[in-house]
Length: 241
Image (cartoon, rainbow, N blue to C red):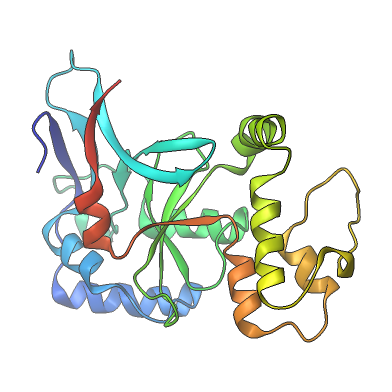
């Protein structure tokens, strides 16, 4: 798949019955309506992975092109696998790497990053809040998105946008969505004039908000990067640091 990058498996491969079980557990735990089959096929072959140089002296990694004015490419450290207790004592068993259920719990419940029917499946690096997610909603099922670390945006991306363009990228994107559905800035009141508009703030401020508008607003910080899981994998490129 890559010339100088090794795809190191996280856990033993899953079975078709495991995939059905994972799908049911995700639906029950997080409300994900449907499990992307391409990701399921990957887990049956490689149950999670870490992308690592096959020579420790090489300074290379995996990246994906990102369509944002303040970031052109994002690192991809690995893809989440699924842990089963039966894997205990078996190889491979890299339990220190991010796992699918634990990572979604962290992003969806602990930090409230993931909107409904948006499942994280890949990560930039352990210390980063950035992630890659795939939609399980019928309106954009299988679409892969990139979420840029909110803290990093607050100290780098937002400053870059304000200094170079005079506006906040995500706020302008949100306002464009509202305009698309016939709303304008004057209909929204900020709780703090120094802050930017946030999706939940906007949704709570407006009455008779169309369902599709709310759907788009809640995905405001998610940027489309691939049409499917397989398309995401095909777009990964090996780069030198």
